[in-house]
Image (cartoon, rainbow, N blue to C red; front, side):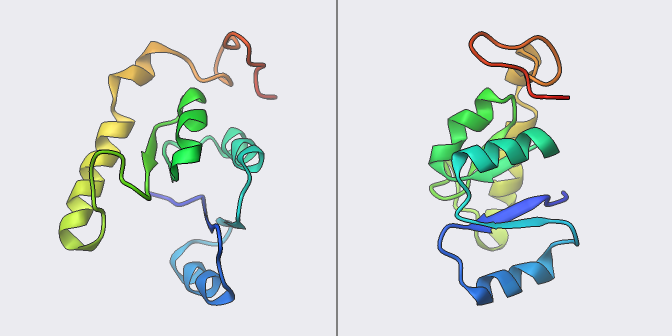
Length: 121
C-alpha cells in the first residue's frame, strides 16, 4: 500500500514532523482539507482507496473510489494494535473488492454521470 496523501484537522508541528518520517517523498500532507480540495486531489491522483471521516464518505464513493471511515470505523473496527490490523486488512479488502465497483464507471473513465461533469483529462 502506497500512501499518496494524509493529513490532520487540528495538526501541530510535531504531528507533521512524525508523519514525515513514515511517508515517502512526494506524499501530500495537508492541514484541514476542504471537501473541494480533497475532491480535486482525488480526481488528480485517482487512488484505489480513501480513508477519512464521515463527511468525506459519500462524495468519495460517488466518485467511484472505495472508502474506509477511519474515525468511527463504520460498522467494524477498532483498527489499533495487532488484532486491529487484521480487522483493518479485512475491511480494506471488502471495500476494494466489493462487486459494486463493477456496476459503474468512474466519471473520468467514461461517460459523465447524470448531473456531474467529467473530470478534465
